[in-house]
Length: 233
Image 1: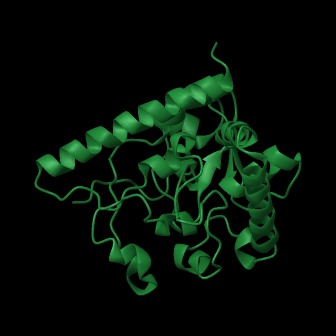
Image 2: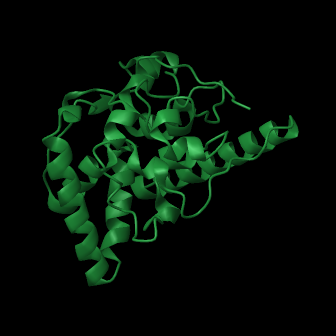
């Protein structure tokens, strides 16, 4: 059996193949390619969900960085957790994207020039999150609710099935999981969820793709069969 971090990288590679195929399909139908680009990080100021092993992989990557950068990220993670844990959104299973954006809590892994510090090892949720229309709708909170994203009508759980087959999969906000990996402890949010192939709805019926409040990644709402996926374009 593969080690967990090697398995996560396999899942990430499968996720990349999935998104590349999806982009080919929608562009073949005449839709414009996703406008997402380096330096455009509005989605990184929205809820980012991950599985625990993804946070473990990112923690390994952080520990290989220069000491100064490690210290910056650790401070950013602590600051994120302190502010989020004391907000009303920490008690919501699926925080609304617009309400979350108003907290001004960007991902603690963002650099000063709005790039991801761990891009090669970013979570699957980030890899799957592709805008399908005007990128200005990502920036403008008044238009954010109408933004379209690429979705495929297939269970998102297909991509994490290797993890479920290995055992229970823990999910939460990425920064909360990362805090526990870097510091050995930390709070959980109402979004915290442990999925098990044997007895969870995700294990039985494959779940769905997309948290009802918006955001990025394997939110527990997926396991409840909420917010069916679709292809926008």
